[in-house]
Image (cartoon, rainbow, N blue to C red; front, side, top):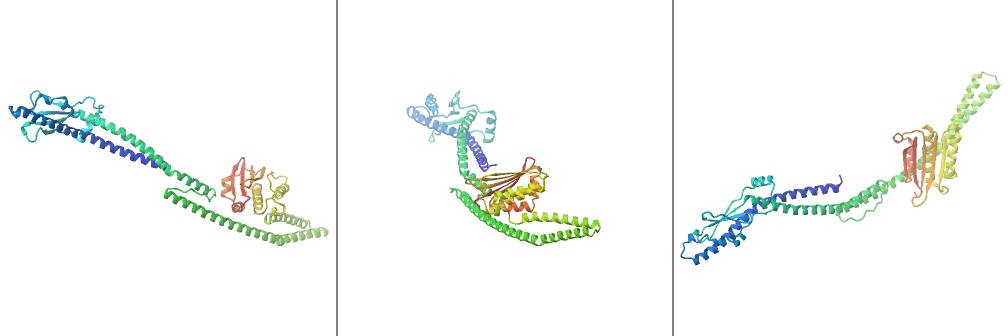
Length: 456
């Protein structure tokens, strides 16, 4: 899962938890706000009745204090304005048949669901009535009792919760959206870093990263740059060592070719001469035919060994590009394979681009790749047709592409795993030249390709 999605998911979880906590707090606050409204209604009505009490006391001093209140004037519209919705107020001691004066409770929001009406009182308890004296200095003036309406209180709480939740949901959505955008913007440089690492995996080690504002990302970018520099230095050192090893190996091959030619070749020539002498002498002396036949077989075996030796010397000595050039040496290589036997598969040579100015290590590497790939296709496969294509790609990426396709039915994966010294040496040569080497399945066989930069 992507890091941005993980952070956004965690953010949404935090927002959901905060929203749940806000809902619980809003439920508690809304339910208890009814108690505050009840106490405030009782206080306001008590103060209003206190003023009315002393007014009646001064105007009607002949009456007893117990008869001063209630009077019809206290149940007025002005008094109704002092009572909060859903709260009922009554005066005690009450007159017979006197009903409480209640605030307007109709239309106090939506009707709450049954589960809310049953759960909230169970967990938060019921509302208590509030009692306030009309006058602290006159205990006989009576008291005001304010009682909340349970149904109206739950409706008010539900309406308050809906309003709070609407606002909370809008704020949560806005916070989640803005925070998600902020997180995505903060992590956007990670894509640049990943792209740089992918380029490094393809061999482009000197990948310059932009300067990041975040200190952590800047440290990662700096570490990636240092890693790329060290990888490039290590690759250059390895390529230099590989080139040196190839030079040493080529020198050893030349020395071995000289030793084989001087020692083994001369001995084979001597054996062939002795066999011819024995055959001629036996024929002139009319000796047994089996001696003549043995001498001829020795001569044939010696000719076969000398042919194998010449083939080995061709492979061991310096390649032809140093003498004939790359194009002529490739033509000579294909012609030599064609001329060995008529039963050989058909070899097609396709040369594209200007190959005349290609020389030095690049030409030698290209020739060795073509030589090894043709040898493997001819000796280890049952191909009927082999195609050797050499193309020079001009432009900024001046490179040489060598490709050998055959229909011998080989397994690319098995060839990669069981690559012998020949393919291993070719891979090392191509890597030392800064190129790439691949073995892929083709129609009916294998496709071996190598890319050699000419600027290397």
